[in-house]
Image 1 (spheres, rainbow, N blue to C red):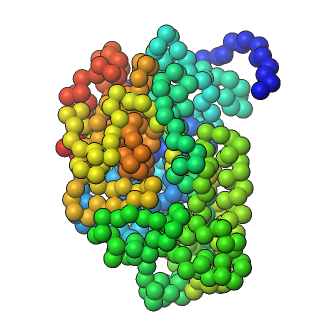
Image 2: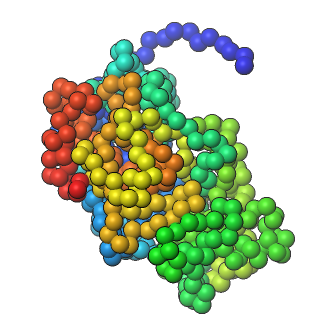
Image 3: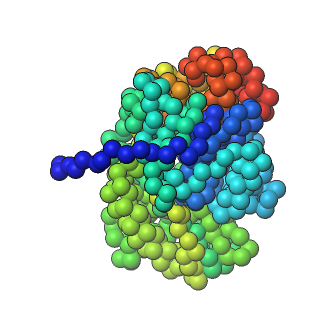
Length: 454
């Protein structure tokens, strides 16, 4: 590959703080809030113009759609996201669970409020591009923005980019799922103009269950059996009909999936119907191709709904998410990498920083937490090797393939993020590295913040 040389330059330090959180998705937002509430100064750095990550930028509104009567959860900031959104009129009851679906636009305001109340220094519209290193310790980050290159310095850094960007560029070992076996990416969209009465009558006349997810390709699903008779807001038949009629090409048999909430205004939100294989979230060319192809498939899906789904005859596109939804890229090789056994068999750990219900969703597996089973989340899974001063929160924590299908979920990212934020704060206050922090103190603060850890 042809190369050029950039001239050396001096970079202005625009901010110094105790803890820098890079990325403001469920993991990063929870980390920033937890650290600030634990009594340290925090900067929250985000590449887009809003906080919330997958919730707001992608449009994934189903934050805790796994929740049922017997589900046991950690509580904490993740549950606070739902409660605050509900209080601010930015959430509605979710269609298949005992949770609240977060309004992707309204949650931007919820996140703003939470950040402001916690005294976090907001730094939107800044893309992380490089770590600032002192030997093997990270002491800050470099960002790019309309202001050019800027440096932000901190005593501790939390990588909540979702792709382990900070850890990877700082020299920590990471693992990447091969592109051909990555979990599918999604282009989320929302509809307007749906006849609510007619749509719901159509759903009631032909209710779908999780068993109906079966059918080849993306929709070959392994369950534990207990999910098979449970209601699912699943739509597939209109797209099968569209293929039969020649409206959708036969090879696009992955167009199918779930809808979220149907409002009295005729808005049908959180349409999770477009699933794109082999999209690498760390490759801008792959992302470009995925965004364009996803929008193309969305319009085919909408036309199929207009023709073959009751209540959708007058449906129209309301909006796309601001960016494609990525489920699977880099994961760190952590001090401890979680295993399939941990997430299937209620793993227990002395360094637990929270619990998560037995919810696995990905790589052809769907297990819902309906029996009270849960696992603990180990602090060590956030500790990258070879780099000091750094924790990794969100979906790029250490773990194998099936562990990732559990821990990648937004609500789990929030639990892990809160643990990372508290640990970073305790490390700053005790003048220790995050790898040497007093875990008893971390666990005590998490309990004070309302987190169940055992």
